[in-house]
Length: 121
View 1 (cartoon, helix red, strand yellow):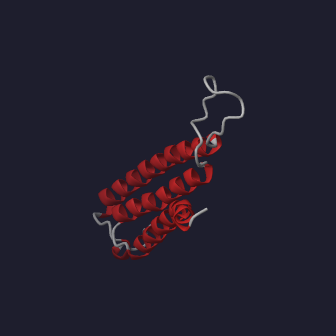
View 2 (view 1 turned 60 degrees about the vertical axis):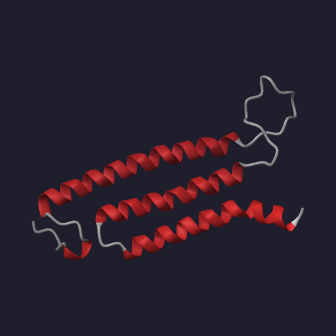
View 3 (view 1 turned 45 degrees about the vertical axis):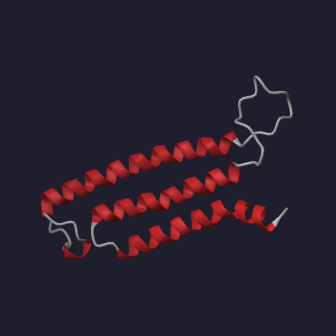
């Protein structure tokens, strides 16, 4: 395997690590709950890239075998199913968090975590 081919096989891992790092840095420095939710989505997108890179096989086809002979290499369908599940869970969590932030803004009028006092009973 040439150096360029080995670097190309590591590229998805670098992209996933970069997305995770950027997302975590943005979460730590976030001053707005809406921005924070967007940063969580960026962190979750790193898991999409990571899962798809785990399931990828060079020269493989889609895992639909009715027109291909037995023994044909195929990408891992379990990883594709996990990514689809991850997308659905991510969309649900994002919608829930946005609904909570909307209610917080209605009650307090602010979205900066530093400006919010603890809730009074």
